Image (cartoon, rainbow, N blue to C red; front, side, top):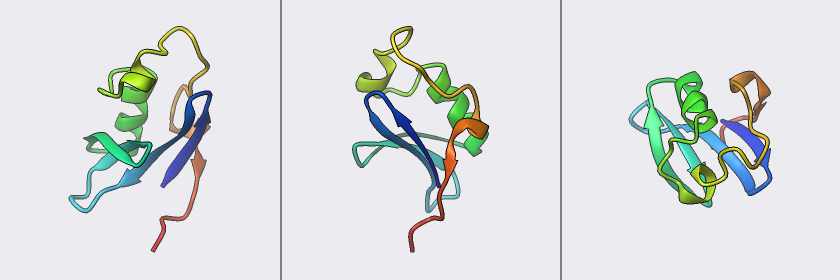
Length: 76
């Protein structure tokens, strides 16, 4: 699981039960992609379907790619 502490709160990318990688904000899975890198790209481009995040385009700092996210061990 990856975490990014954004200006609107913690964002997560986590492997889902279907082996896709989901974007999680406020305990909601907003979308998923085939890889964590692809999901990070969607978040970077503000195309997630999460209004709280997508509406911040051009207003806040954001991670350029998955290397700027913090790796956390997946919870059991």
